[in-house]
Image (tube, rainbow, N blue to C red; front, side, top):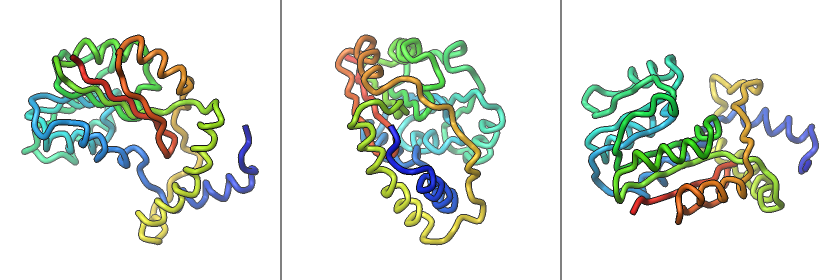
Length: 218
């Protein structure tokens, strides 16, 4: 479904590249609000440069951060003070899943790179009793609600980027040729599969082309 003309979309892309901001980090504080003030162990799957792992270290006695990219994991180690209880590991999140149990497992903008049902099954298996799983993911737009949220997000995205950059163009604009892998599953697919694996999971569509999943193990 085409909402805007290619010309308008290109103009928005140029604006967003000039005033970039991190859509995933936007949800980090929300993630923390879903978790207890203190807990023993956390696992962050797809940890990237370690921003969320460092925030989790303010709550957890130890944080295991896993990413398949050696370069970004090396960067994460450099950015992380030695005093923080965070361990960064380069590993495949499925084939080399770190053995739990964990009191919190987080996965932000990563699960669409993994076999969805298998990933959720592993998360469930390694989550401690009364532990919390939180996923912030991407889905493929399909329904009118999806497209409506996309339309609403466009001006909100531009305004947020302008405000976060204080109206100043970024000295290093984001390349418009860079693209992450697109999500294959629709939100309805995700809800159906997730609730088969995680009965009672709470899922919501969110702004900025994201959805959230929260599940607490009994």
